[in-house]
Amino acid sequence: MPSVKYFMGQMTSELSNLAARISDESIERFTAEILKERRIYLAGAGRSGLIARAFAMRLMHLGMESYVVGETVTPAMRKDDMLIIISGSGETRTMIDNAVTAKSIGGLVCLITGHPESKIAAISDLVICLPAEAHNAELDSTYEIRQLKGESKSLSMPLMRLGTLFETSALVFADAFIASIIEIKHCDIKEVVDRFSNIQ
Image (tube, rainbow, N blue to C red; front, side, top):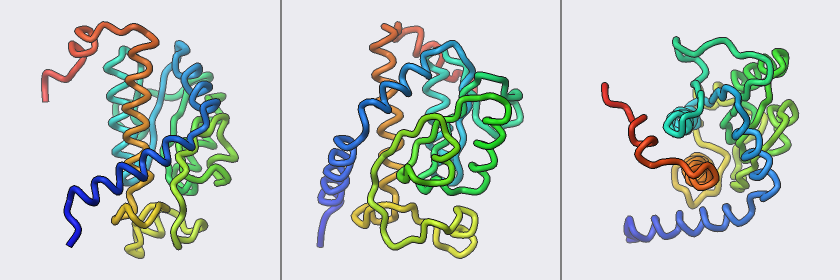
């Protein structure tokens, strides 16, 4: 019977293969946009929403003004603010609505997805594709419908047993991106640590 370490090795291999296929140009554009003086909003549904929250927290640790869409303390979006949507399918209905609203305000919309031909991608100014291969899930099935039908898997490679290749790669991408920004900005690690929560 395969061990936990065996599956960890399989997942690590999948992530390495995926990372090699991410567009360098899209990462460079994403970096340039996120380094501008602007407010950054993060949004996602389900597990992708958890990754969005973690990414927003890390951006805050670097001294950036970041917010999670839907939180009661999140201010209204303004022109030239940035919305980052994390959606494996790129078809989640609520995230489509968020993208349309952000564009109508004059915001910059960035999508982190496994499907660059999706509806949200068509609305977005910038797309980061984490190329997880689709399994047999239907692309036109929205996140909400899949949840109601008990089909909550992401559109991911089968070796990630619960369909989590996209979410796992999105988390690794976000943390790697933060590490890159720390180097670019020559962040003082003490200042970063001082922004960690001290009241919970």
